[in-house]
Length: 299
Image (cartoon, rainbow, N blue to C red; front, top):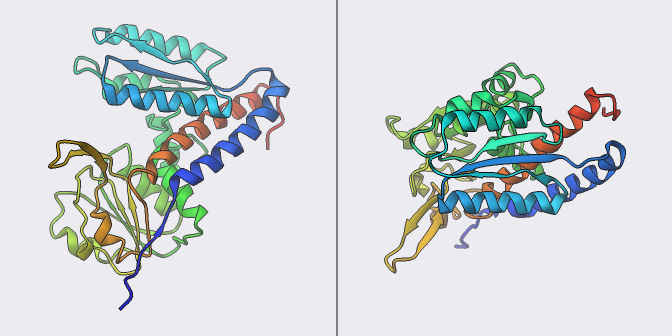
């Protein structure tokens, strides 16, 4: 009997396509308004993973022509100093997107800082105003990771209308906005999580299963409906028997690849899409600002 292997949803390749689209948009628009889009990433402390993420974002910005206004603060920086930095960026006409790199040192209030960001410069799409716009189906910046998942599904022409979608995870970063975006696309949505009773009976009914709980290996092959689309949002660093660390998702990829119709790898699936949508949000804010100022006639 021939072993079936799921088709790969290649986020890395699609991210490159999005970068090309953004580069063309920026080149055309910059000639008309006289400046590139600007993204400010605020990082506090010396977390190596955060430094790597910020570096990747800055490289991606350079690739498409977005100006980086990164600010790196020492660990002991106060809440007031960061709020003042955000206030200045809110007023800076060169800056279209602002994000605070998480995690922050424990003495800082990340939620309060997020609330300080001007909603139309909220590149991460996590401000309560933008989440409210998502609930109401209004125009606004969308949370990058779930928006990246939606773009990936659209690229592979995976229809969601009337399908059973299960989101495992309920975070404000992914789970909750993901469920809202799926509802908007006419899917029938269930939100489950690590404390759901008999998780297997819930996930087995999913035409689309999105794992976003942050627990390595949570979803196994017996929990997946044959022919389902499985999207792995998990990014977990685990140490193997050889002492080396590697990045894994929330699903048992080798076994599920033999059951699912489509699957995302980790790395190379949702991760690159998150960065691409961050840049897309920044460019969307840039174009909207140009339109509102009358400099650019954007449809």
